[in-house]
Length: 443
Image (cartoon, rainbow, N blue to C red; front, side, top):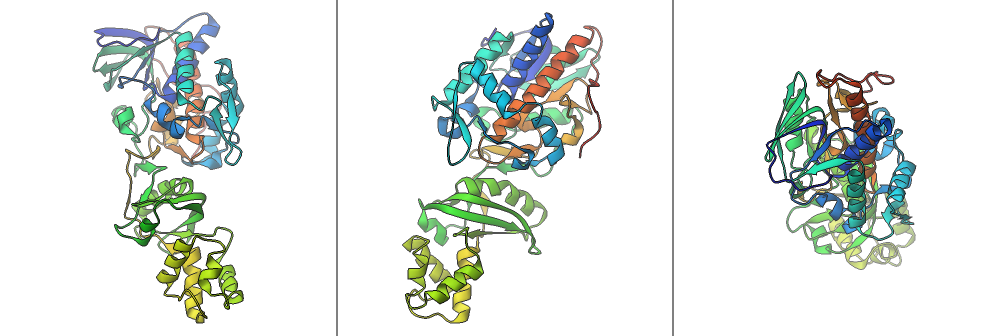
């Protein structure tokens, strides 16, 4: 039963899911479905602090909801190690996601140039409605708005204190999200709950998939509205190439945005935290190197550098690059001026001074380390009976539906495993870690 509940003195449940976003609704649904198969239904409650659930789902993909990507592997993620992430992703694949939503009457189409999967309605409301229907059919009781302010471990399980009352439950699934889009409810409170139950949180916690900010008046900001393919390269203070991202890049009135920028942003912010001398640069012509641009300038010296660059770049950008390199726009260039221009075209330094913050970021980098979680069940190694799913964990994907696929996969594993463990346990005794499959630590 799905219901808005303003107050509740005390509720007893077998399982409480904290956070009813993508991961939370999915975890609750699969917990209910797992119990239903046995013919022994569980009392499952999903609690969310928002008046209207699913705000983050509704705004995703520009309101279209990029549900997943046609090809998802562990290399599309950062945070936890690839072997650990792969172990969870293999438990619930893209094909499983497509099948789940098809059963709810939702069909997808694949965006040709990106591989992203969207509902044919091009409406994120379609996805949220499908998730709510599935949870309802699985017997989940949704309680909102009810913000969880604390969780205590007891001999019989857990006591969750909320703004609408108290919930006693044998097991908990923490699906509170990270800190991105705090108005949606993911304001970092889940990290405090995890700490209170014995977990650590990675350092730093930074925005991911977030636009970057340049100094006020930087020449790139004068190109606001210009979008073009580019490659951003992150290097350590010692010059080692750490990360690169290629894709559409948008110049804005405050800095840079677009898929390539969003993908590199979390790597830049994390790198700068430990290495303040780390640098970021942009290659405005991703298929060219400094050497090849230098040769193009040599070959086209009779036409002049501006004419050569305008074959690959807009006039405004080409003029700015000539100015920044101290190169004339017409006539012959000295060797030093030519090489300086080639370097600016392929590695313009980006003196990033900040980012647009969690209020704009699409995801969070950092969270509960996967080394503190049993990956077969998403159950805590520190606190038996506590499971995790979604963005509260130290996993974040690149742009393209990958963060949703992590929510579906981790939500499925956590929900099904928590329900199985709850069914096996006795009502009077505390639950312990489920010993299913290989329990080796992956780090």
